[in-house]
Amino acid sequence: VGRALPLTAKPLPCIAVPTTAGTGSEVTRNAVLISAQENVKAALRSTDLIPDMAIIDPTLTYGTDKELSARCGMDAFTHLMEAYVCGDPNPLTDMVCEEGLRRLAPAIIHACEEDDPKARADMAFASMLGGMAQSNAKLGAAHGLAAALGGMLDAPHGAITAQLAPYVMAENILAAREAGRITLLNRYRQLAVILTGRQNAEPSDGIVWVQRTLKRLSLPSLCHYGLCEAVFDDVAVQALRSSSIKGNAMPLNHERLVNIMRRMCKQEPIHEHSHSLSD
Image (tube, rainbow, N blue to C red; front, side):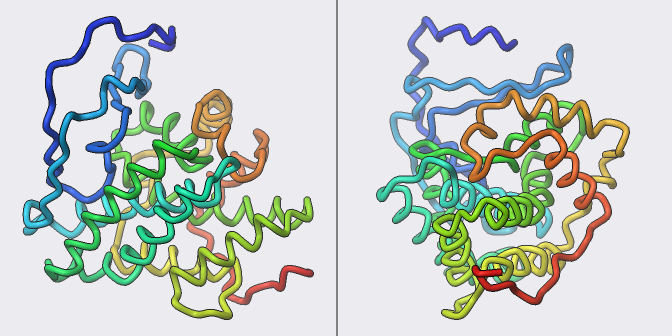
């Protein structure tokens, strides 16, 4: 684990048929293994891991229970969101992320609660686009922290990224304001416009959308899985070594990562009154 050795044998032919709408792994070069001995989730990346064919059939997600649908759907959201605001975006992934977010935002509740065919189709497509986005751009602190927490907690990856997402967004927006990063703030504003459907949305409105969606989907907090403040420092140290965090929208230090986890565990609401970019 952690030696960064290359794959030396060509994998067998693979046809990927996802039965959830979440990771988008059917179109990525990524795989993950859990190492119980090292207490980590280790990522493998190679172009040889890209499936030879991906078949996206939304009907295979019908009947999935609400919690599984919700945490998978919010993982797809986090892929699209972090790739959109990452430190290394590009025009191709911008288009992919915007289309994925436009489909996901109005669909996720209907897909999770009603098995609505159009919503399930939009979620399946958004999940695939999220896989494309993360493969061709970067991710961020939500996935960096999730990589560290995933080995410590008996919690699904999607449940971890879902709870981290709004607090990472809030910390990035705060850091961007402090640094005067108007371009990044405008990107968070456009994200909020897509999520809310309101042209006058401000960056913090996107965070409010995420928190309201999490509440509606009734996803458990990470305290439910045993997360406590005693491990925050260790998690932050591990997260700072992750590849995902290197793509974060803003450089976040150890203190900021601990603050994200502390606010998340307290389930602090993000204030709904937006600030203008000149504040």
